[in-house]
Image 1 (cartoon, helix red, strand yellow):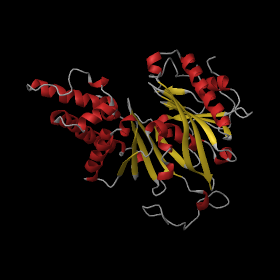
Image 2 (image 1 turned 135 degrees about the vertical axis):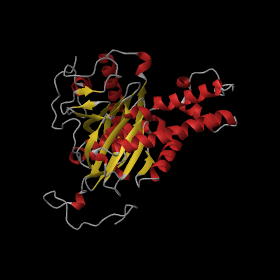
Image 3 (image 1 turned 90 degrees about the horizontal axis):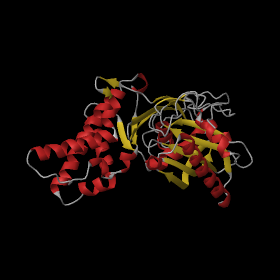
Image 4 (image 1 turned 120 degrees about the vertical axis):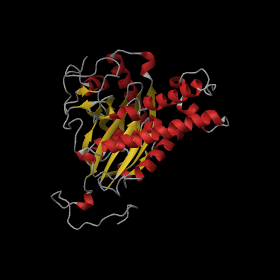
Length: 373
């Protein structure tokens, strides 16, 4: 089964217009002489800076305080402990790398802010794996200080853990009428190293998703098993089936909808046009359609054929922040992982701010920075 035929669905994939926001752009690939701009602020770039600091110490006759272990083999939690530990040289090394990386992150952000869609950006949320560490938080703080010298742009870390945010945002892919009468959906987050599936419980208030909770999350580090593409899709479908059974056991009314986050540029039919090179097997091009392949293996949910909707993973992670972005109009997300994911959003008028024809009411009350009218 290659899933080359698109599944029947009334929802386009990678839609630019969602219930709460307009997706102004995502997966922007800014280039410079040495390659992509975003590569300077990726997780790999951070570890490269640590390697450079280690090499400088050794060149000047100092013993490497991190020992013989390669930087790529030291976990983020271990690096956090070293930075907060009593070994002043080791701690100073990590602090130096964080400061340099934060400055580089600020420089990269400045280049993104030159893009037409980003010019009026009020706030940027930093997500991705590095943001879940203390080092990542400090790097974001350093970048915010550097940017504040020339700009009023707000910079903050993502509220939810990135592993959960990459699932939680999937609820925002579903129109509110699809969620009406239900209290849970399934979601999947596919990356170059890991796959995650989640059962999400939510609440809808005034036709808006007001609260999302991850009831259960399943994780598979597929990079360790090196599966073929079909094996990977089959495993993901089994994870989703297990969560659907859990929804029944928990007496949750599961909506016939699955939101999928995946790296790369995706067209309205669910084809990954580019950016899926780190996925197991060949996922790009018209010869493979992930939503269709998943639908073939997943079957019905609650007696209905589910709508499986896919969007870029940075977009979905950003969508988890929708409830926290009601005091601004335009905002963006940068996800620091293997690469640097990106997406930009403009909030759409809320239901109480529109008339019977769906147009924005004139003279609607403005919100201050606290989110109050």
